[in-house]
Length: 189
Length: 189
Image 1 (cartoon, one colour):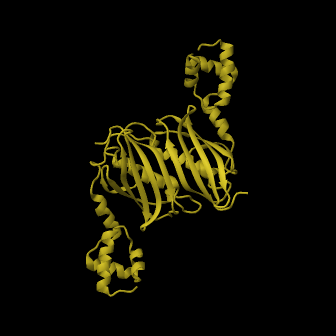
Image 2: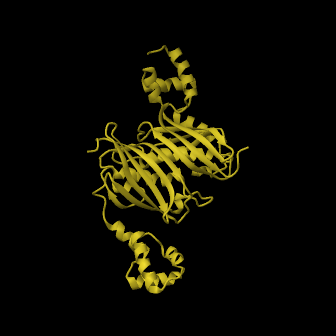
Image 3: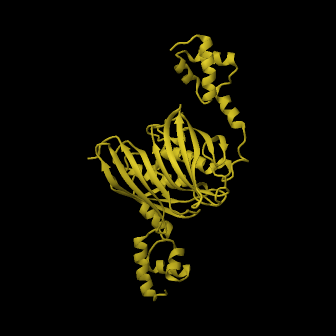
């Protein structure tokens, strides 16, 4: 659907606000215009390019918030986190994440992103994974950016276990989901 | 239980045959003798040290057997494999596998060992993980050697899915188990 420039720019602005990780290519396809048009739109609207948008979001330093592990041990980049509630991270699939033969991301990297986000989410000095139930919904390819969204969905005070659900997306399409049962040293208040 | 030398050496030989990955320290403890005694026993029995025993087992080259991925993409060292039946691998937990804070192995490395062994087990050019249900039974520490044993327990010919069960052990104590549902490009014959 082709829109008039004014309408397109309005929706463009909302789209980027909702999903700051969308690329110019994806926007061009969405609006059936050229990438050049999207770039001009962004310039006119003073919306920085994707790389800058990611940097802006990631500039917030979460290292003081995360308690269960040093932030550099989180696989992927934390974009947002509220301990014991929800967290978001971004992992760009690089050559060392994929099977050489077919450029498909290896499962344990998607698992590592989700699992380390679940650990980071725990408001505790010690958090370990007890169980996980995971599903690889679709293949992820070299160069794709995986957004993992984790949220605490339940707490078992007696056992000291916290249930964390993680869903990972590429371009808002789900690629991985997992339910993690986390052990923690202190019962959650 | 202290044994006479002759009896000890007989049981020692059998023990190492059953579990070639046992260390001299573990043997010394088992027989309530010094490590030096175990070393002398091994010398007299012409049993090479652990490092050599692992090399001997690993010297068999499985790279022509494994079809689903280049053997260097398997996490850990393949010790034995019969495609579509069973496989064994060994992963030594090194400093980059553990949380810095407590030297506990990070879950995704145990997962990667088990998952890549399940992939290697597939007698197919293309094999991907669809689902997994995993349990971390006990913590694994820096320096421990994890033996993963994978076996095919079921094949769904219609869906083209193969079920692989993996159990991982440290000193014959179970530390991890997982059930992997593997997608493969060809239905298994």
